Image (cartoon, rainbow, N blue to C red):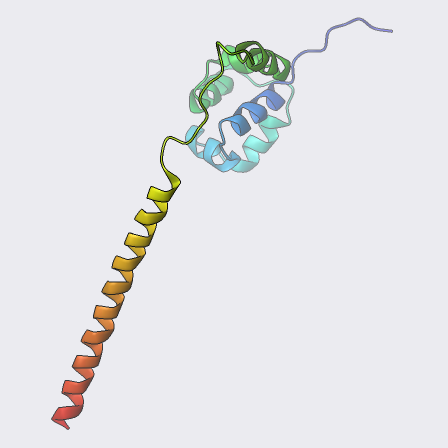
Length: 135
């Protein structure tokens, strides 16, 4: 049985950080001037050369060291250690707007749109009547 520590899978780390950044492979490829297929290959690789890693890190907006040392467990630890469910740290997650105001605003916008469409139809009718009167 070996106690050898496995090296981190850099490609998998790139993939997870890209996903956390809500970025598609195509967008990352475009940002570093390569193809989506190349990104797919990189994300399947255990190691990535330093120059390419630096370019990818810049495109993802993180230091290369973050990619090298990325760990999902660390992310969950950070989240777990920064949110405490006690009265001193409970945040107000209530709406910052009145939903009824938003509904009324939407109705007003729809009413204005309906009035413009109605006026457009009236203008069309008037034009058609003019054309028929000329005949």
